[in-house]
Image (cartoon, rainbow, N blue to C red):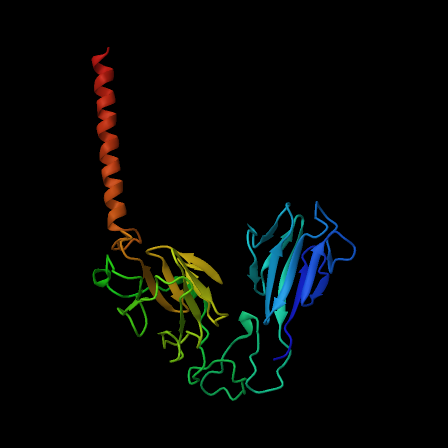
Length: 305
């Protein structure tokens, strides 16, 4: 596969820096990207390219932020991400060179991906997806975030005997997948559309190897495997995230619920306005308690006069 190329563009003046396998960012003159503004450290951050992906790791007490959030752990960057080193902001862009082979994957900006429709005679690379292709179907990011499972709440388990993944949307809606090796630290279950995966989700939009669910004894996490449409945890796109009982995981368009035995997690039926029955009941009880307290205060005030 051709080597991935990434570039950082300085927001203030448009200056571009092409990134290599490892790029050190800081105020030292020998850094690959020299930061002069603000209180940048000599070695402020490190950018690395691994297996075609761009990663950033903060090295400074003064901090580094990505898309407005302070960096607290090593993080994978995507084209369009905005990095701020103290006072200087940069925008990430990246692309792969044109592949030598027909099957090589082409990394495009989201707006460039437009599969050929009926009657369109243009030839598109095989790594791009059309509805007639057997490869992963790219799905609009807004649709991924906004879509929700259609499985009836009444059909979902409230208690489980072993760690369980409940499929809430897609072809396997209602399936309960038991993670029987959960007591073993280091056990993992691969998730994807390929039949060789431990958990097979054959829906369009799920990559052949999409993600993995990993048991670390008492802790669980989901790890995205550089899937085409990403992995979401409680609505947030993430390359890796720890899981709690009741966590909602989306593998592309397929929504699942993660449950643990004796977790006490209950699934509340949502009302049409987007809240839940339990939440509305709590608000009602709180309002009644407030009115009773207010009435008591008024009575005590009148009696004391």
